[in-house]
Length: 413
Image 1 (spheres, one colour):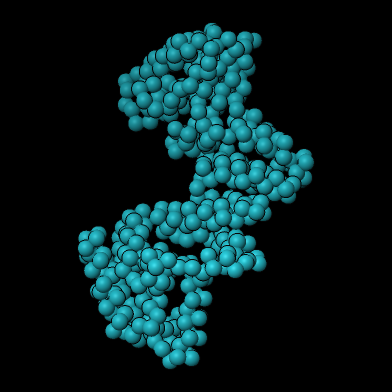
Image 2 (cartoon, one colour):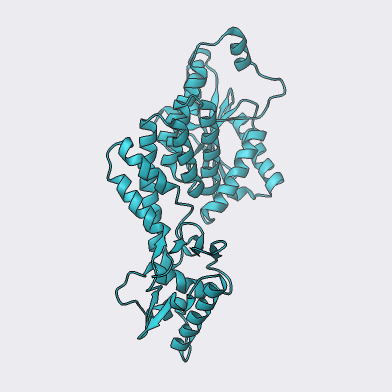
């Protein structure tokens, strides 16, 4: 047998044999797309005993074609693939895409080493272990090989999708175990790095955001954990119209406790409580903090017999895509931050609603605030009044769970 052919498919698609100056990196898009898909498909199915039938390749490469001679077209593409491999520096390239009796095979006379096969072997070896000492070496070796989804340029196509999904799922399982082992072994920096790698591939993988925050906190870096929380919160709201889950909220609370829960001196206390006269704008907060502010306001109202209103602002555009709704909600958040009084707390409730606490406000005051917000939306973003619904409820009545008696609808339909 000749030299071993080394192939990578996890991320970039490259082919290389000893003696070549550099690997041959190819694309599964562009004018040469079909001939390289032919090569990739044959490599992935090179272990078939008899080879890949010509008709299977024709259906793969020209699913909607009505060519008068599809077999000849396939043969022409196979010939072009051999020529491209020859031009790239492979020896005996005519035998790399072999055809016999209508069956195609990849390099029947050569050994092929495929990175996804090595990754899978190492991953399964690691996942069979029970301790960090046994599982981490093969796990870390495997994750270093995963540079992206298998044949990422074609990962969404029918012929590649299920295979690509399989390897990604295996990678996620492996990283989940490896992060747990790293944290168990006290290797927090390595756990942070691995979580970050996964989140680069899939920013919505929330379990790894939780693990990243936990590793940062355990490594005495709570400020960086809070920075990651805020980045993720904005990503979720703008891209998906959702908020982080309970586990991320718990890690955020722990980070805040670590920063502010220790003993502090008078100078540090003064810096923490100081408020610049130039600071303004409403106070956006998460649901838990908003709830605590409401509780404090209710206690104050019992003592002073004062007033407070809850203002609900709803986006009335269910006909839009989630991405477009996320844009409108971001516009609404910016408008609330600038149109409300300095210090007025507000929070997001679900995909399409904000809740505002107007401390000391009567219904008439809340009506004026609602109109000011609507006017600002129309002026800054040219949004029609029918896109939004405003509801006002007296805070005293909100003790009845799930009911807002006396609410008044403004500016919507």
